[in-house]
Amino acid sequence: MDILILLALALAPGGAIAVYIYLKDRHEREPVGLLVRSFFFGLLSIFITLLISDIIGQFITIDESSITEQAVHAFLIVALVEEFSKFIFVRGILYNNKHFNEPFDGIVYAVMVSLGFATFENILYVFEGGVGTAILRMFTAVPAHAMFAILMGYYLGKAKFEHKKSYYALHALGVATLFHGAYDYFLFISFVPGIVLGALISLVVGIWLAKKAIRIHQLASPFIIKPAVEVAAENQPLENSDPTNPST
Image (cartoon, rainbow, N blue to C red; front, top):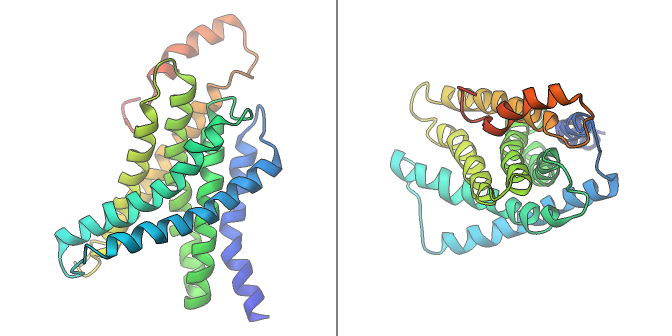
């Protein structure tokens, strides 16, 4: 019974976030089968992460007491490798699917892939750390993975549907890596008194930007039927919106 409780606690945050994002896709929801496939792509991305990390580990060692080396660890060895492993499935496979037909779909598919990764990771941590770990990660690590994915998916949506803006795909990987790296870095140097608060701040800021990104792409859907005057009023702010720019 204890195993079942731990498994339920490990699966719950990913499931809740998946339902939340699915319901936010208000205008033309994705096939459930394709979403399940995206989730399993996330599981496969774990093996890519392990392979790349193992190769890097042959050449680079990190002094865990070094603030500088922990930055390399957080941003490059962990964040970039993990986000790249998820990115290649979203950009390389799902991006070209016929059902990816509005900007918000970038968010949907990126989140589903990320949840596949995060849920498997969460199961490992929860079974090792118990109920306390499950509750802590329910409100931190799993939402953080979803937040990284929303920001990635936002820029992939822009890359596909804004004319001659394919370079936004690089922004997608870069922004996800930046927030992931910042979150991890403050945790990795938690031996510095009070620095762990930085992880919480980066998470809160990231979630605020993610909610903004969701709203922007909801309004950008081509499936919304609007009066001509409303379309004209909304076009300008949508074109210039960037959830990572506080001034927009």
